[in-house]
Image (cartoon, rainbow, N blue to C red; front, side):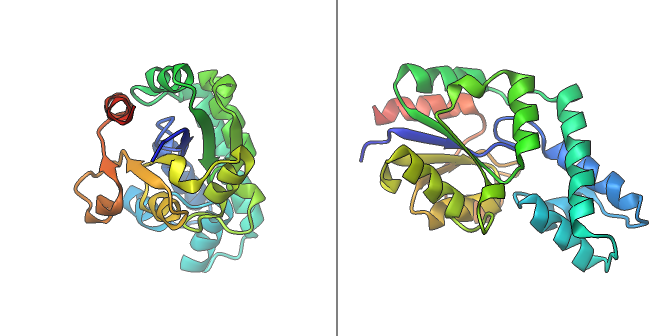
Length: 216
């Protein structure tokens, strides 16, 4: 097995944006007199596409607001937070440089919408590293459906067994495994037993580089 393609999830992997998503959801929902916690966000919406996020909250709290409006309000808030405060996760630039120097295909497969991707790429100045960028916006189904990962493989013309995915959420991990791809995770909670289906669990992208060197 030759790993020649590395696929990144984005939120919580490339950039520490999960707190921004939670802040945005908590604040926007509060404007509709709905109180949710960080734990509620982790449990109900982490790793999901924005249309699934808004629909989840509307259904859970019987909101009468148009889910599309809720989507746009959350996206706008997250873009603003990323633009002002976004920071790369530990080891990102080192990993991107390693992958580039070793001739990996580098791709992004994220549940986030294009405005979020653009905000992250502009904030971190990393667009030039990626051969393919896929948003779940363009897929009929978001994660945990494997469609977005399978699309990346198709666009790059690579076999799924030659792909290695880096995820941080259970939703994304399920999508990656369903795509029959090798999957590593850097989760917030390394003790969550659901992550045991990943090929490996790491603490940072610096650890990922060490792991990749063992595959050469």
